[in-house]
Length: 250
Image (tube, rainbow, N blue to C red; front, top):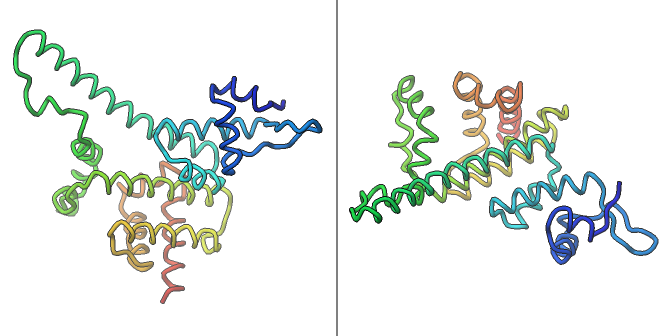
């Protein structure tokens, strides 16, 4: 079934002007144009629009959304990532609701609210500590390495790093699922772009050090399971691809 711009705007509750803008910047193109000049959209375009709107709900800029979707990742992987991002936001909003409820209670009773409790949900440093708690405990117990102490939390930087890492792994998982060889230029480019992104964020990462990290992920049970939960075979695929790139860079 095909839909006009007007029908799509009514169905998705977006304005016609928004649809025209998405077309103009190449974010959402029609599948065809009718003899009468109407832009028509099919099921794939509807799915892409849904993905765009999920990202917009997460405050992603349009340029970033276009970059993410133009890589043609599998729809299921995109939805899984978006669910994770939305769930994290939902948890934060729940904490903010709890904070405002407590503020209302204290105000109604004429008592002073605990200073720390006043700001629960606003800063995300505690959220990061909670999110990393399992990994931190594991590394400390097995390697005597305190993840938080050795890497002080910079919220903005960690948010960006987590977002970049998530999308990198989604693309690697897609390549594995599609049967792309580990030494294919597409895969090598993915790793090189990710290394470049890490270095832009202040990390000192080379092809060799990234390969060493991938090797650690492969042999360490906790981190291997994290990767395998995304896609069976991903830990080994990442390692051999990273090792191949490092060898070529020597």
